[in-house]
Length: 259
Image (cartoon, rainbow, N blue to C red; front, side, top):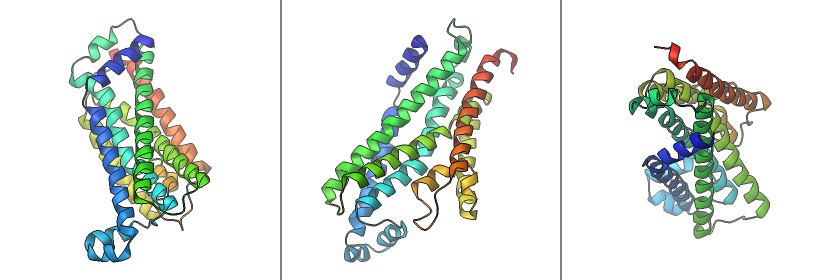
């Protein structure tokens, strides 16, 4: 496991993808801050025209609880796509770079290789969520948002991290898709399909029973009047994450017998 982790971290360190994902989360924090900047002054929002209308449609309030809730939604919905790309890259690159065959003949256990990839993906997701939360606190302080309190901030930051964790769990099946598809294409198609289905099913009111809709609903993207997903929805996300990880490990252990 130690050797597998070292190899995966070396691949990540030599890639540009960590910087690209960090830039994506930085932009998410800046966009959320821009919404707060507009919402803090209705006259300014009206002067900005369409941009002001879009900001009003976000349903956020120009205070700390509203801002942290908006950050959680950005981390759950937009972050889910980024986490999916991370999982696809970690597994799909072995086939695109033609290194998968080399991995299969190493003395390192294939289960350890898969576990190392998922461990790197989990830490990567956590660091991105912390980056979003840290930038959010900095931008909120610069904007001088009202109603700051330590309990509310702790609750908001906890929601950001929890929503990010739920979103990351739903990406393990994409690792399996990248493995079976032997590259990026099939898995990216699956990612787009899941994102589309998550939006449609949530709009129909059944998002609490579709794992890929649960992180956004948990973050409050449906609005304050909607109830968050219950224990069943959270259980479905957990089962999806565990099933995706286990089946990916099984596939890699049987990769010699697949075509």
